[in-house]
Length: 96
Image (cartoon, rainbow, N blue to C red):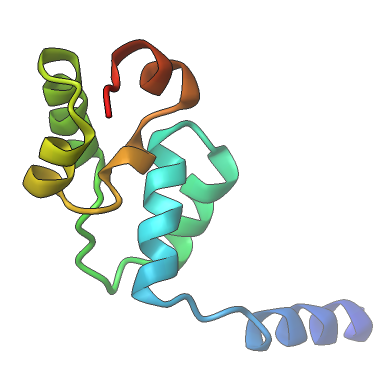
């Protein structure tokens, strides 16, 4: 029993601290459907105000459908906005 308690304490203490950039990546991966990233985002990133959220990715997807120009999407939503989309969406709608 003591071993289990000690093991849980060590795992809590050695937990990874995520940077804002890492949390942005987790948010993008979460939007694309990664349950692991969604869990890590929820558990470790509440302290950050993230740019690449579900709302931003949904708005950028609407813009992608209407005008698939990568450069205009980046100008409007930020450099990493293309990471909101999976490969199928990029292949179907994105122009360079």
